Length: 250
Image (cartoon, rainbow, N blue to C red; front, side):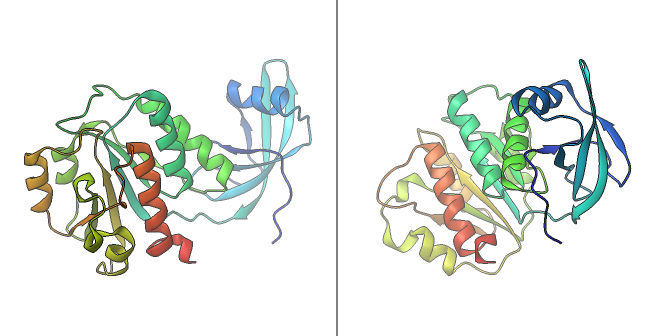
């Protein structure tokens, strides 16, 4: 089926099925009616991360109310590869950037973690979730990246299954030829689940390094000859992973 052209694509967190009429949230109404200037009858695409993607049309547009009518399913539900991103959070604008780009690059779980040298004490989970949703809407993604609550690195590692490959981006290994990410990933053992770990600007402490090196299925890698900022490192590592092991191969 050829997907019809639509000017908008919205995440709607309710069950979807043919014939259902859904009243939109106020911010979604504003976006459709006042930003895009759409009217009754205009086609849009909607998805909820569970039921696939549907074609809908605006069925009501009044001063304080906008509804859409679900017409037919365009695509069945699929989920991104089981890839997590763990990272020591940074300042707000760069944190937004990480959430947006990680979602665009197909990360299933976004998990800010507190490390010994982390300078951030609080993370706005709702803001991260909003960034993940907006990125999914723009990139034709059918699922939404899950935001894990800010927790310690040791707590996060306790939730790892033994079969999940932990790709540790080690700033102390910058420029080390045998740890180059492309070589390391090409030679990595077969795996269905993976997680990429990015540290803070001050790097990992000695105790954290010892803990990481003791983890089952941990792959220490270098992101090249330069020490990258956390947001740059995250996007670089995810891009390399998707091109070598992930869904860019399809």
